[in-house]
Length: 77
Image (tube, rainbow, N blue to C red; front, side, top):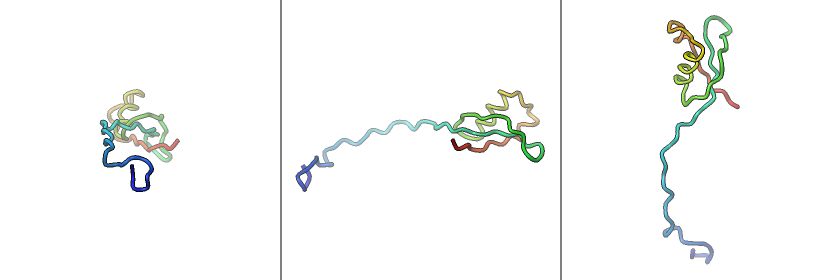
């Protein structure tokens, strides 16, 4: 019992086991910069911007020469 007579003493409680951190997937809005304004391509769910750009480049068959013009911006829901 604790000093005030309620509950349990924290010294005897087991620590929570840490699990492996999972990759958090985030919504990304991917656009192709060709001129102003940039051309919206699609949304994707990926752990980081580079992965999101790669996923959409493959899904939308964007050529290798244009892949460096893709930009992924984190999208807030």
